[in-house]
Amino acid sequence: MAVDKDKLRQKLQFMRENIAHLRYFQEMTLEDFSREVINEYAATRMLQIIIEAMLDICAHIIAREGWGLPKSYGDLITLASQHDLIPREMKETYQSMVRFRNRVVHLYDNVDKQEIYDIIQNHLDNFQPFMQRVIKRYF
Image (tube, rainbow, N blue to C red; front, side):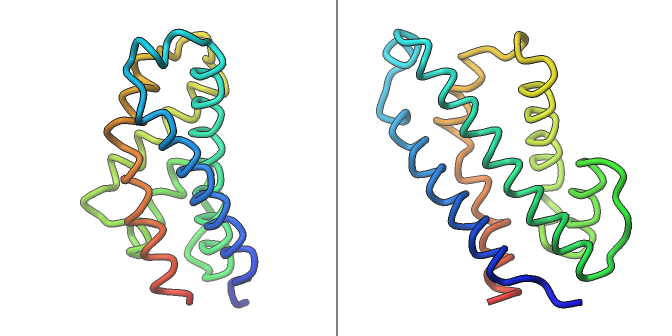
């Protein structure tokens, strides 16, 4: 069965929009970011849903392409990497995203604002290789 391009387009746009929202926080110092707890909470949630949108895309493509039956989010990343949807050299980066998402969802009281700030400042572009590969392959 073919991938649903409308679904992919919607999820990619969702990722783009939320990454753009997170760029707002890149202009802040850690002190400014930490001043209002709402900044940390909003940024954490946006990171979570960007990762979830990425995982939704992976799950959809893997199912439609018949690449396997992943049992976990980590398995999604492994299969996506094996099929060049995720750059193989970045597999561990994407596995780290999954672990971060799991901590946000299940161990939410164990996520540090410094970590959130660091991700925003230094790692937002890590989503781009995945997004570019989806676009190149399916559009």
